[in-house]
Structure formats: C-alpha cells, structure tokens
Length: 398
Image (cartoon, rainbow, N blue to C red; front, top):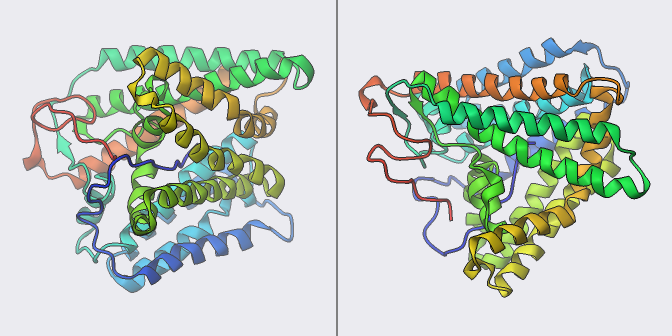
C-alpha cells in the first residue's frame, strides 16, 4: 500500500533545503484531492477503460507533472491534474488487486507534484527528476559499479514464498468465527512479507543497474519500536514527504500535536486511496482508523520506555501492538482483494506473481529515471542501499 505517517524523535532542524513559498500552497494539493473525490463518485457508474488504459493514463500523468512543474503556475495545474487522475481506478475495469496497485502507482505523480509545488521552480527536467528521486535532495543520487546482489535476490525469493504461503492460508480459512484470528495473522504476515519484498526487490534491481537510490522500505519486520517502524522502515519516501510538508509546518504547535495531525493526514490519504479503488466510504473510514490508533501506541511505548528494552523484547512489542490493531486494515484489504485471486481451488501463485512483477517493474522505472537524472560524474564504488559514498549509513529521518 502505499503512504505512511512519520514520527520524529528529536527537535532538530527539518526542511533545511525546502524553500516554502507560502502556506497557501498547501491548499492546491487539497483542491486536487477534492477534484479527485468528486470524479471518483462516478455518478454514471460506468467503467469504460481497460487496465492498460489506466496504466497509460498514469504514465501520461507523471510525464505532464514533470513538464508542467517548471514554474509556479504550471506546478499548481500539475497538482490539480494529478489529484484528478487519482480517480482513474474508479473508471477502469479490472480486478480489485490490480485496481489497488494502479491507485498506488497514481499516488506517485500526485506526491511528486505536491513536492515540486513546495520548492522554488527548477530549470530543466533533469533537475526536477533528481530532486524527486533524491526525496527533495535528502539523499543525493549516486551511480555505482554494477553488481549482482545475491543476498537481495535470496531475500526477495524467501519473502515472495512467505507471501504466497500467507495468501494460501487466507484462501483456505473461513472469513468468520474462530478462523478470523488465523486469517488476520496470515494477513499481517503477508503484509510484512510484502515489506521485505519491497526492500529486497529494489536493492537487487538498483545494484544490477548501477544506481544508489534511497530505499523505500527497510525490512519493517526488524523494527524494535512502532516509531522506528513508521519513521525509518515502512514507506520511507511517503514518510519523508509527510515529515517535510505536514509535520514540519505543524511542529511549532508541539511535537505531540504535529505527530497526531500527521497520522491523521496519513489516515485521510489511505482512506481516500481505498475510496478511489472501491467507491465505498465505510471501508475507507475503517481503513483510515488504523492510522489514527498509531499515535496512541507510540505514546504508550514512550511511557513504557520500549526503546531501552532488549531488541528482541522491543521487536516483540512492536509486532504484537501492530498485530492487535491490524484487523482495521487487514480485513478491509482482504475483503476487496479476495475477488482478485479466486477461491481456495485457485493457486496463490498468480496474485503473488502480480505483486512481485509490480515491485520489479516499479523498481526498474525508478532506477532508470534516477540514472537519467544522475550525472555520470557522480559515479562511485558500489555501496549498500541507503549508504553514502564513503560507506557510512545515511542519517535517518528522525
């Protein structure tokens, strides 16, 4: 899935390279989302487009955002257009799984347009690409020696196998009664396996193509606190965007208020994505409620000083706390995905391969775009994902 809130731990300076134009600029992304919501209601209840048309619309959307964002007026038009394009899945005839993947893909141009709107205009498409691929210049892009990352490939294979097993279990247990805990546990394991796939897949692709791009996921199952899960390991690009564009402007009212508000914004974003796919507000509200609970869990773990616990105990706390609330997001997700992978007699292989292909293709696109944006002069020796050229770990977002 796509977006997450972020939990800063220290009051250090943020947005060092972000030149805010005006608070009024935040109204434009909101207006774009409103346009998308209006379009997503689909009053005629027709879906005239096939999946390939939706993918083409997403690619055209991304290209137009890159071209139009050269100046302030164009950036405003781009974010309005990208918000409107978020409703495309509501007009596409496809299985819910592919509709969800398409919605996640269409989030990228919208976030890019919103990010470019918040900074001074950049001359040249390569500069805009580099700014976006480096997460608003947080992690500079670097070329590196091409190599075959066997460890990443093995991790990708294992995570894919776990996801397939989780889907197989979900397909065989009942969606009611005493089988529900098993169903939710399998769904949670599948979500963590997806996080591992989204960690290992890009690492393998980027190493093969010779580009060092900041990782989007960082082995979420290894988190020792919920704060670390959201701020350093799960969907780090969206977390960085929320930190810069939501937390930082609100931090003057207190870190606690800013954290709660940022998670609330994340809840709205996730709920809207579900609405854009299904057109059902009830399921969207339940889905978004999961993110509203997270600040309470983080406040609890801070009171318990979980960060001082042994790593194994902290990891057990994190996974248990997330599992206790995961039904809010797991059950709605499973309900609309089950129509995509058939009954128990249908193999779990096909939905698993669809997710794997999405990760590999998206990683390839990001890598190739980053190569196009990164000057050849910045070539360095191969380093690990998320590391600087000197081999040191890049600083976290907190």
